[in-house]
Length: 195
Image 1 (cartoon, rainbow, N blue to C red):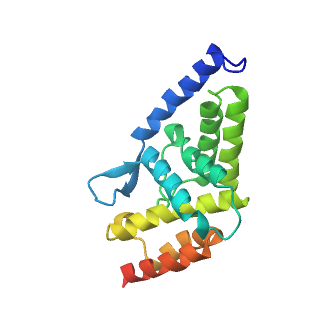
Image 2: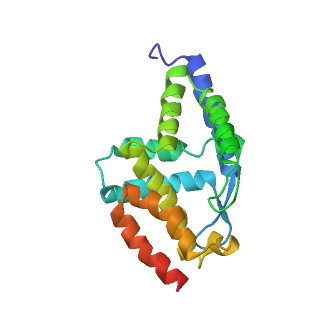
Image 3: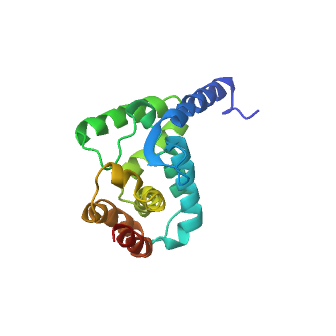
């Protein structure tokens, strides 16, 4: 057994993996496309990783796919403590950001230090949305619920009484920052939905 992989390391890694099982219980507002129920945050994260794998060539910048997928797999882990706060709900952003920061410290702190720090740094990078990898990851995080809303005849847009203009404002800049191609395509779907 490698020296770095001892029982204490495995204990911490397995504690983390058991802890993040709770993400399966964080229910999002977005319905599944078949509308049988709402998706949970773990399903959302997996689906985004698949979006990255399939749509990687749509990025406007050169990206590191492994880093993008890692960001998407961990980006919502903080919802275990902080909850999911949909785009169309009004909340105190500063309180939410603080709750998420504390959650990141606690949850990634369960891991062995170097591993926890690596994932926490990726989470902060995703949140800042400044690197090419993070910008593309963020664009996919905004794209997936848009696709669900169009496929479910409005989904959360109908529930939240969201207008065509609000959709363009809330989704457009984030999606187009990572991929003008993807925004150009889905902009047509959105327009068709609201006609």
